Image 1 (cartoon, rainbow, N blue to C red):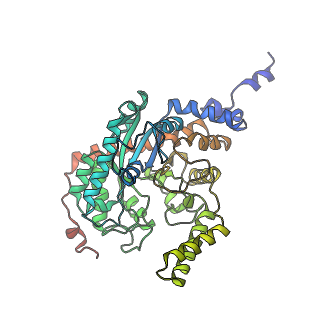
Image 2: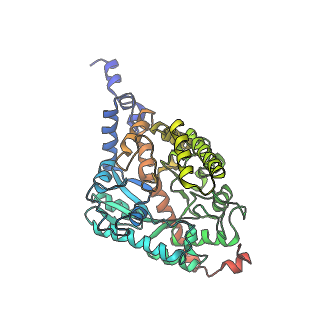
Image 3: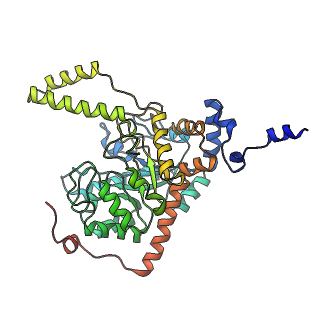
Amino acid sequence: MCSALLLALMPSGAEAQGGTGQRFRDSSLTARVAHVRRLLRSTPLVDGHNDLPWAMREEKERPLDVVAYDLRRTTKGMTDIARLRRGGVGGQFWSVYVPGEIRDSGYARVQLEQIDIARRTIARYPDVFTPATTAAEVRKAFAAGRIGSLLGMEGGHAIENSLGALRAYHALGVRYMTLTHNVTLDWADAAADAARHGGLTEFGKEVVREMNRLGMLVDLSHVSPGTMSDALDVTEAPVIFSHSNARARTDVPRNVPDSILARLPKNGGVVMVTFVPGFVSQAVADYGAQLGRVRDSVARAAPGDNDAQFRAVAAWRASHPSPVATIADVADHLDHIKQVAGAAHVGLGGDFDGITETVKGLEDVSKYPDLLAELVKRGWTDAELRGLLGENVLRVLTRAEAVATRLQKSRPASTRTIQQLDRRITP
């Protein structure tokens, strides 16, 4: 065989080092999806945020009933077993979300109910889900053909300013906590609310330190840039953003500024890109803002007349169709984060069953391979794709576990209180 032919048949440098190579980059969608599915058989896809427990709570006919919400059938929502399998999901942080606006009997009751829903769901399908609290347990579940299932709290309001409550949630299996949801806390500023503290208070910093000691991941989705920055200053373990995008691509408060992305290589953390249309597409975000202004104007013009307001808004929407967010838009965010922070600092956090509108082509948990195929077309290597799928966040979890082991040898559980550290509670 001539040397020229031998050279042509040899893998490229990218392929030899685990890359996808030109033959997949320029191939058909079918071929790219097939390649992605081969990767998914050996690398767990670990998603950072799925709100299935809240969907079960909110189910109108039989709320909180995990038996009636049968995952062996096609559900009304975005998640069920068949679609998880088609999507190649190998690990999942199930969000045990509680709205920051709940004021009925305190946050703790609702938080415990959400943890209960998630745990009962995992236990109901032992052939599909395996409870997991460590990276090793996720890998073990994946090797057995099951989905390693972790719990993530969405909002530090649920600890009710108590480090003891934080430890109790950890003991129940929670392995990340989003420091805020949409409401600024007594100790941390939220992205969607007034910044009253300039980031974290002294008690907020103690929350981060205690999370490090426990091995609970610090999740910076939903928080203000000041809170992001303070948390990065304090934490001894890598952070995550369980469901956030790049602010340079879509300028909304929920996304991550480049100044924070640039700090991730030193910290080791991961931004898990989400599929919320208004966080993915600037056009969709702008449309949402305009729709909000229209609603406000209509409410002023017809105060108290809900029917008139509904008709006026519906008429406006009929003549102003919404833009559509696409898989390409999501890939643009992934490309940007890879460029600024590096390929080791990206992940996936779809927010399925926590959203009412979806990205075209990413309508439910079965669609991950189509997004990954888009990245193959853009030249992402196999090593980069494996990191995105789950290796990056499992590295973060492993490192947080190691930090916790070290810290538990050197300091006891913190008994500091918000009254001691902050002198007062902000009204």
